Length: 372
Image (cartoon, rainbow, N blue to C red; front, side, top):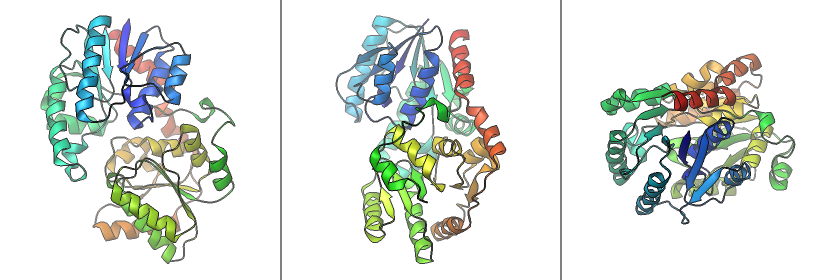
C-alpha cells in the first residue's frame, strides 16, 4: 500500500509541524507501507536521515514560503499524485490550496490548531481570510481528519460543522524518548560551553506574541529587578520584529540573558537537559510539544493555564493564570520564577509521557491507514 506524504515542513529548518511529521514517518517506515515523500527542497538533517533510510523523496526544487509559491508547489504535488496514484495522500500541514483533480485515492489531513479563527488578534487579516477559505475548501475534498488534541477537534467542529461528517481521529504528537536521539552526542561546543553546569531558565519556541514571549521578557525583567538571579536562555526562530528588538534590549541590559536563535535538535535537547526550569507562557497552543520535551528530562515547568496543557500534562505543570490582564500575567509569572518547585513527581511525569509513546502512536496511525 502506497502513501504519499507532503514533507515540505521538513525541507530546510523543520517547524513544529515538520517534527511532528518526521517522528511519525520514522515509525511508519517500520511497517509494510510504501512511503514516498514530496518536498520543496531536502536540505535538513531530518531529510538526510530519511534519505539514508532509503525513503523515496521527490523535490519541487525551489524553497516555498509565500502563498503564490505554495500554489506552484501544489501544482507539483498534484502532478506527482496523478503519476503515483497512491492509496493515500497525507497533508500534515492541513491546508491544500488546489483541488487534486486526477488523483483517485483518499486524502488525509492533520489539523493542528484553529488559531486564525479562535485567536484572530495574532494574525493579519489577509492570513485569517486565507485560512478560513482554504480550510473550508480543503475539507471539501478531505476523507480523513487527524487532530493533534481533543481541544483542536472541538474548535474545528465548532467553526466547521462539516468536519463532523468526516472520519476523524485524535492522533497526539509523539514524544521521542531520550535514548532514541543520540546518547552523548548532543549539542555543539558553544551550547555546552556556555550552559554546562550552570543554572538557567529556558524558553524554546517561536519568538512571537502568540507564544507569550513578550510576557516572558517583561516577567523576567521584573524578576531581576526584584532580586532574582537565575539566568535566562532563549532559543527559537525570529518571527516578529518588535519581539526581536525586545530580546536584544534584554540581552544588552543583562549579560545573563542569552538568545541562540534557531537551534538544531541536538542543541535543543542539550538545552533541555541542562536547564533548571522550563518556561512556556503561551497565549494559544494547539498541543505544546515543548512542554513534553522538557518533561522528558524531568524538569520543573512554569506554564500559562491554557486548557490544552491540562489535557496533555494534567497537574504536572506549575501554572500561572492568564486571567486578569497583562500586568497581572507579568506579575504572576515573575512570582512563579521565585517560587517554582524544584522537586518534581517523576512517577506522575512518566504516566503522562507514556501516552505519547512513539511505537504505540505510530502503530495506531498505521492501523488507521491500513484499515480505513
